Image (tube, rainbow, N blue to C red; front, side, top):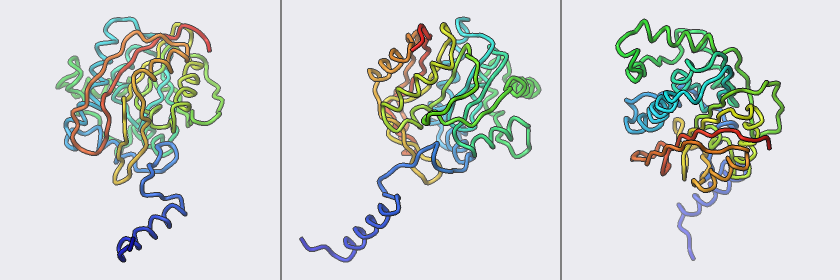
Length: 280
């Protein structure tokens, strides 16, 4: 076979990229590569970027959480949050049910961005557009500001934590642990996912709840121009991973994806509520 000049150049370029660990077919990883957290927020939190994506990624967890929490079955003193990005949408939804909140985050830049919001700095991300999705706060700017201040007061600790590594954390067991997308983003394979589920289980009291938001058959997601890894898994694997972690799934809500852009690829989103029934 005879290659023309463009094919030869492309072959050489691919070899060069691979030599320096930059295979064009490879994906970046949330917990290992730097990115601008504002790109992440602007892409997925603002409806102006992609309304359907915003409705699925942000509003589906919020609305499902609101319905779940109204049952009164999930509450307590301490909540641990282990979620992707400097995102507070889910915490604003759940914070009234807990008095102490601990935030774990593997990405240093996202932690800094979260700290800006916690301190109320002017350049921090504006979340007020979400107020319309809280019926009791809709149209009342003062009440929304009070809601954010309540959450700020309840966040009593923020820690850099990469659960993909063998790290020990000085944490007392909590009543609830919430994770929004992050386990799928930081697990390079299914075995890594199982290990993180077991670590999260170790942070919970028996009888406590694990609230997980994730995606089935996710392919990737974009931050800016960079494509990032998401773990490809199905519901059968997910259920077994939670069972092996000492949990029983009490509720599993699913949403088929209608996103048409390439910003994030997945078949379904889910929100699972699982009760820890034993130590593992």
